[in-house]
Image (cartoon, rainbow, N blue to C red; front, side, top):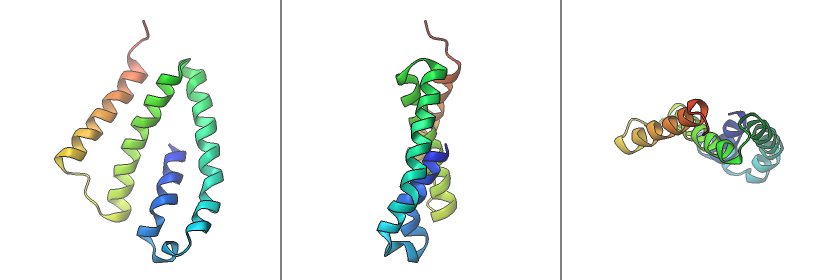
Length: 105
């Protein structure tokens, strides 16, 4: 989750604060290492916990699609309360719930 938050700020700070729009290199340098470490260790722990890279990938996707709309709504004021976005959020939450609670065969 933290990696997705860092990633959101790395690519969207330019739209939230004017200062970042002219400082792309600073954004990459400041956010890249924490983001990369969060994803690396998050991936490692998820694969170890679920014993599957597929589960780690789907959980990562689902978390990204729950964090992105919330931050975009809060920080940029872009509504996530549109039918297409809400359907995608529900599907992402469904993927997350399947990965967490549906037992492997």
